[in-house]
Image (cartoon, rainbow, N blue to C red; front, side):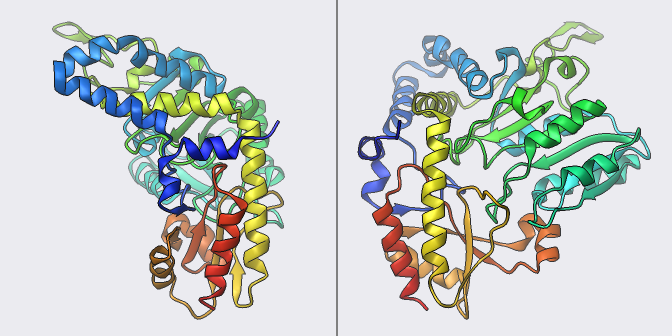
Amino acid sequence: MGLNVAKLRSETPGVAHRVHLNNAGAGLMPQTVLDAMVGYLTREAEIGGYEAAGEAADALDGVYDSVARLLGAERDEIALAENATVAWQLAFYALDFQPGDRILTARAEYAANYVAFLQVAKRTGAVIEVVPDDGDGVLDPEALERMIDGRVKLIAITWVPTNGGLRNPAAAVGRIARRHGVTYLLDACQAVGQMPTRVNDLGCDILTATGRKFLRGPRGTGFLYVRRELLRTLEPPMLDHFAAPWVAPDRYELREDARRFETWENNYAARLGLGRAIDYALDLGLEAIESRCRTLSTSLRAGLQAIPGVSLHDLGPDPASIVTFTVGGRDPDALKARLAQSGYNISVSRPSSTLLDARARQLPVVLRASPHYYNTEDELSRFVEAVSATV
C-alpha cells in the first residue's frame, strides 16, 4: 500500500516554504517531532530541567526501544549519541589494534572515518587496505572475500556514501564477515530512514547512524548498535561515572549494556525528537518509504539526464535517493545559490568527503539533490525546469 503523500505533507510544516531536496543533509522534521521537542523544552522552562526529565522518564527510556525496533536489535545493544560521528568513533576507538592488523574499507569511505583509520594506523601499526569495486563502481564482495586472512581485524564501510547514489552491498559484506569471524562496522547514516536497516539481515557487529537525515529527526542526534556478544569485550576510549560507575576508590565497573558508550548529561529534547521521528518512520513502513524514494529519485535522474549539458555522477545498478550532477560550465556554488533564490534546497558535495573515490573517478564538485517521500512529482518537474533554465 502506498503512502498518503498529501497527509504527510500536511504534517510537514517546511513544505509550505521550500522545495526541500536536501534530505541527505537534513530532512524536514514532521510536526510530531517539533511538538515533542518544543513541549519538552517548555516543561524545562516551567518546572526545571531535572524535573522535566523525571516527568518524561518513560518517554525518554522508550527511545531505546524505538531504535531497537528500527534495527531489529535488543534495547541493551543500543546507545544514543549527540551525532553519528561520535557514535562511530566511540565504537571504533574501543577496538584493540596491533601492528600488522588489517582494516579493510571501501573506496567510497566517508572522510571522517578514513581520518580515524589513519590515526589508528599511525598509533598502532595497523594497515588500511581498500577493497576494489566491481564494474559498476560498487564494492566487490568477491574481491573482499579474496582479501580475508587471519590478520584482518576489521571490515568498516559506508553503506550509502555521501554522494553518488551508491548502495554498497552491506548484507553481502556481512555474510563474508560472519563466515570469517571478522568484526564488521557499518556506517548507515544515509541509509537509515530511506530503506530497511535490520542488523541481523546486514550481518554487522556495529552500526552507527544519525537522526537528522532521512529519519527526519533533529540535528545533534545519533545512535550506536553493538552486538551483545561483542559489546561485552569493548571498553570505550572515554568513560564517566554513568558509563562505568565508580564502585570503590580504586575501581570502576562498566555497565553491562551499550550505554557504557554514553555519558551522563544529554540533550533530552533532541532525544525525544529522535524517538518520535523513528516511530513516525516505523508507522509508515520502511519498505513503503524505500519504494517511494526509489520512484522519486529515478524520476529525477531521468529528468536531469534529458537536459543538454547536465551530467549525472551516480553509481550502481540500484542507486539510493541521492542524485549527484553537474551542469557544464556552471559553478556549483553559484548554481546552488541561484536555485535557492527560486525556493529549492539542494547542496554542494565536494571530493574531500570521499577522497579516494573522488580521485579514482576524477569526480568534480557536484550538486546533490536528495528527494524524500514527502516530495511530489510536480516539485521534481519544476526543479528540473529550474535547472534547465540555467543551462
